[in-house]
Image 1: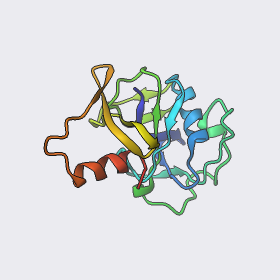
Image 2: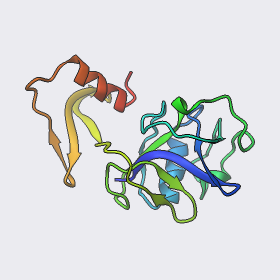
Image 3: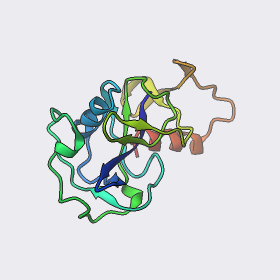
Length: 165
């Protein structure tokens, strides 16, 4: 799956996007621009690692219909009140890039570079999106997680990964 920190190419430099106001509509534009299917989530908080250098976009406000992220309303290029712990990310449904990819850089046709080992997780058969049985995506299919040695620390990682607090 295409998933990772979002970076944009502007003024001949790659830079990150701040998660202030970052939502599923913004992620939808990124996923479409990269030809990576639909947006499944729009994680913030540097979930895919902290970038470095310039933060190009802040207060991004896409309608979801734009063809490129740079066409979305946002603060002027490079003007922000963010730090890299607020870098925005996407998880898309497509498989142009195999899962575990980050960052997915947004430029031209999109370039994905393997730099992390993020494995998508989901919760199923629960009362809401933040409760249920844990499953991970591996070798192109979803599978359950054994509860041997499973503890609160493991659960906290899953909750953080799913932006559930």
